[in-house]
Image (cartoon, rainbow, N blue to C red):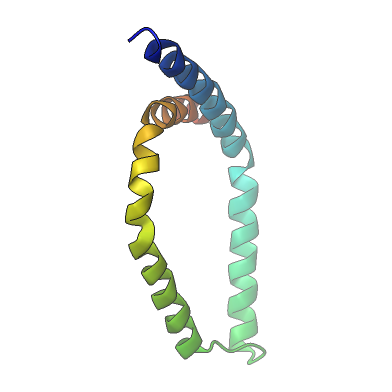
Length: 102
């Protein structure tokens, strides 16, 4: 028990601080990202209506099905994920706090 406690406290502290920093930074740059995505979507819509670009729907569906096949293998990641629960929990709490304060 005494060997496990310092490791968990270290993970909680590091995760909380890291989450706060990431949440604060994401809050600050989120408006810029949303504006850039909006400009990109509007540009694609404009180019699509002018006939400059076209979408190959067969390739799009093939890419989506291969992505879903890859996600089916994600169950093997579960063991590694369980060992990171203290870090992820404190990271998430720090992220929410940093996002709220940012």
